[in-house]
Structure formats: C-alpha cells, structure tokens
Length: 463
Image (cartoon, rainbow, N blue to C red; front, side, top):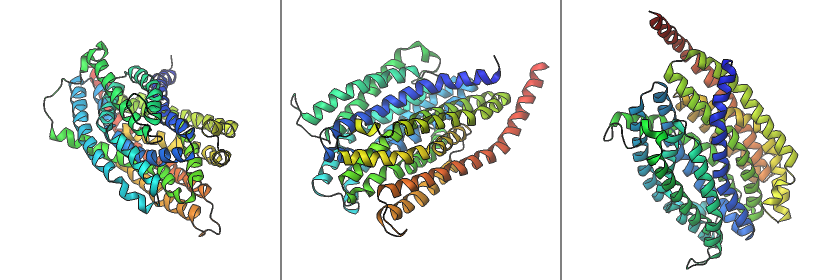
C-alpha cells in the first residue's frame, strides 16, 4: 500500500466516525428547529434567537477544550501515555471553571435584548430558553473534555454511539418540556433549552462510565497520570486553547448573531435565516470532521517526527478538502427548493430559505478550505494566527458589511437577509485566503526543521 493510500485510510478512519458524531449532535439543533417550527413561527424564532446566542458560547468552550486534541495527539505520537492522562485531567478542571463562567454569562444575556429590539413576550421566552440551558453547562463542558480525550486516543466510535443515543432521547424530552406532562408544565419553544440540558448531562455520564470500564483506555486512564494541577501545563493548555475558542466564537457568532440583527425585520426573516443556517451548518459537519481529523493526524505525525508522513498529509489535504466542498455545493444546488419544506409550513419562510441557500452553495469551497487549513494549523500548535484572521474576516468585514447591506440603504438599497449572506460569502473568502497564506508561512519554518530531525533519527538508528 502506498503512503498516500495509507494516509487516506488513516484520515477516513477518523473523519467518518467524527462526521457521524457531528451530524448526530447537529441533529439536536435540527430536531429543536423542526419541533419548534411545528408549534409556529414564533416558537421557531425563539429557538433561533436563543440558539444564536448560545451556540457561540458553546463553541468557545469547545474551542478552549480542543487544545487537548493537538496536545494529546502529539503526546500519543511520542508514546508519552502519562502525559496524555495528565492533559485530560487538566481539561476537566478547565471545563468546570468554564462552566461557572458560562452560567454567569447566560444569566446576564437578557441585557442584550433591548439593544437587539427583542422585547415583550419574545424576550421573556428567549430568556426562559437560556435559563434552561444554564443547568446543562457543566455537563456539556465535561463531556467535551472527555470527548477530546477519547478521540485523541483514536477512540471515536464510543462518542458516535453516545451521540446517537442522546439524539433519540432528545425527541421525547423535547416533547415533554414543550407540551408538558408528568408534572412538567408546557413551555413551548423555551422547553427545548431544558431538554437540551438533560441531554448534555446524559451524554457526559454515559461517556464517563464507558471510558472508566473499557479496556481501550487502559494505557492512559483519565484519572491516572501526574497528580494535582500543574501551572505550566495549565498555561500551555489555555495559551493554545483560548485562541481556538475565541476564533470559533467570532466565526460562529457572525452566523448566529444575524438572527439577532434580523429581529427588527420580523419573525419570517429570522425563521428563514434559521432554516438556511441550519442546513448550512448540517453540511459544514463533514469539513469540520475532516478538519479535526487533520488536527489529530498532524499532531500525531509531528509528535512521531515523521517528515515523510507530514509531506504526504499536506499533499493530499487540499484535494480531499476541495472534493468534499464541491460535493456539498452540488448537494445544495440540487436540493435547495425542497429542504426548507421539512422545517416550516410557512410559505414565506420556505421562499426566503430557498433563496438564502444559494449563498450557502456559493461559499462551500471557501468554507471548506478555511476550516481545514485551521485544522492543520492547530495540529502545528498555531492558534493565534487563525484567531486574528477570524476576527478580521467575520467581525471587521462580515458583520459591519452585512449590517449595512441588510438593514440600511448605504449601498443604494436595503437587501434584508440577502445582504447579510452576501457579506458571509466575502468573509469566508477572506478567511480561506489568509489562512492558506498563514499555513504556507508556517510550513516554511516547520518542514525543514522536521526533516533535519527525521534525518538525524535515521542516522542514529543505523549506528
């Protein structure tokens, strides 16, 4: 088997289960949106605004904890199992600290509503939704910490199975909290927040039990390793993870906050955007899984000092990324008129979502390239560069330009939701271009050094 085929198989073994996991976890939001949509446009708008505020926070937490992925992959590549165990213990400690901050932050988000013109019953319902999510913050943070630990050891299937179980449980839990029963009051759209909190805790407890009893984790148990919290490792973890979390926050909030910006245009504008965003996010799961696989493979190869392996990985990453992105674009173009019908029975919502999905097809290649370049850079322990690029692309280009196109007549006409999605295309193009240049710059320094170490190791082994 050639080195290229071997690397493709290694990437596929990680990407496919991760993709399924991402799809299943994305399915929670899909189920929430569809079930809320059948309660009415108002309930869907509540879930859209609430999840729009919650998702950037969730992904910030996930990003910070994702520092364990390249760190553990590097330690695994060098076969330092004690360090792998130590990393996950520090990840759990950081998860608990972050969950406290999330609870405080969610409790204060209602101050944003007046600025965003979210008032009256809508503001009350969104606040209820966020209040429900507060109860699940520690569960989701600890689940993410254990998930990165499991995946960095190559154990991706258990996370996929648990994600399937919790997705199936999310449906009856949503129904219970939305419609009431067994002593639970009917909450409508906000009930999705309470159901999601229950699902988060179930996911964490299931994964904790599994990794505690399975023999697949025997060589690097999460509760072994160096005792106590080490200040230097904690600093290294946060130094690597905080830029990842901040970059994810800025990227996703540029998408999610559009729901808040569109609130003055009415429930149809918000709901149509939410439908299109839900479908775009669903498609994004495959490039995201590939990006995470590239992070793990890069970290593992770097830890092993395998120059040839790194060269092979870099040669195949762009063609694979382009193939995935073009597939997604063609899928959107072929189904963009039918997909919105599964989300809403409102014809105006369907019409708007169908139009916005054309922009989704337009940015697939840019989105795929930017996220996969980010994955390789994370594996190389470069997270600051992607952070600044993300900040520039989404918060200094996308949001200001989108607001001026969508809600003002600065460009000659007010384009509404279309204007904001035009800006998204430009923002993703900017991110893809700058991240590609950043990776090229980093490789000029890393590859020669890795090649020298690889050559020295070969000479030493032949003595």
